[in-house]
Amino acid sequence: MCGIAGIIAGTGRSVSQDELAALSESLMHRGPDGAGACGWTAGHPVTHSQVASRLPNSQVAFAHRRLAIIDTGSGGHQPMATPDGRHVIVTNGEIYNYVELRRELEAAGVSFRSQSDTEVLLQALVHWGVARTLPRLVGMFAFALLDAERGRVTLARDPFGIKPLVWTMRGGDLVFASEPNAILRLSGVARDVDPQALYDYLRFGLTDRG
Image (tube, rainbow, N blue to C red; front, side, top):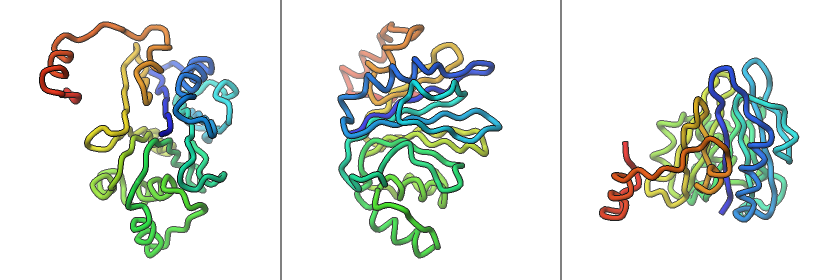
């Protein structure tokens, strides 16, 4: 397993280096093989760092803790960006059919720099789009994808929630992580339990509530 986390700052706000570092540190146990972070502000290129606390304050910031399984070298480091720097992804999990997807993408002219299933996922999302890619994925996954040109962040996970992805709104900020304890490290996050949601989970095992 790996750990992913991030903050999307509300209008007129920026992501604190210290808060991003706190998210990353709280997920260290999920990924002992490496760490990375990235930040983006409209009108500027995405900035990458291996240490979250060294990123400049940004409008959008991701953190990743890596457990190396496929392509254990530097080719699997995250956050991972496309060669043009427009799209950046952090992901947790494994895409079981990544070899087949890679062959299709290569036949369509897409080139790869690593043997990582994360790069296959990233290129599939760029080449086919999110809506067409998600139904084609076989595996367990959770990811956050930044499109810096459009200023858009997409969060997604596998249909069964095998790989967790939790999020909350804190004021005008959206905060997400692989575990609730990471989010609860931040100040201003409500800790109240929704009685109906708790009942639905205990009675029916329901984890998705629209």
